[in-house]
Image (cartoon, rainbow, N blue to C red; front, side, top):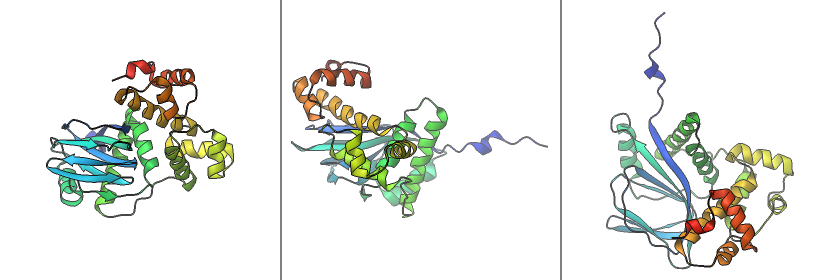
Length: 264
């Protein structure tokens, strides 16, 4: 019996090289370009996106992308806070030519799709998988993104793959980045048994609920440290910590470095 050609099982069509949660506060970025496609999914806030000579507003629930080599930048108005997932996609010129053509013809660079709030869990899972040291997890992130893009291109209603209670919890976390809350507060909002909810959340997002909540807060704090000269106590307060020393300890646990190392 002839051996199967290993190339038959090569299902990689493109690679998600990164998918990160990016908080931005009171900032205007310099125009820049990337070598890959840049996909945006806005979780909260509003801003303006400069794409070449075009400028358009973006807000919660918006999804759009830019092609490699296109000059762009995000502008966040004074007093606004923009929280979004940004993914960088690397497409092979030969193997992914059909996908690149479909993206251009059907979705279109800079064309906004109003996806709403339903895909927070999808992007949270892609982000976790894209950062994994396990190559299978990274391939899963790429496959998930490819499926999302093609579902959008054929106008198929996309199931988030998440439970309504998980989506409700993610919304609660997003709305409470600036205040302190406990797991009990979160449970009171979703109305589920503690052990059941923790298992449910970890199944759909990949990490326990309060670990994900802390990631949101520390991501916001990291951006505040880079973008402002506010005292450490003020930064801590803006992400729900009354004690700057406790905040500094938790921040170092999260990032591996003290808050001062993140000053711009």
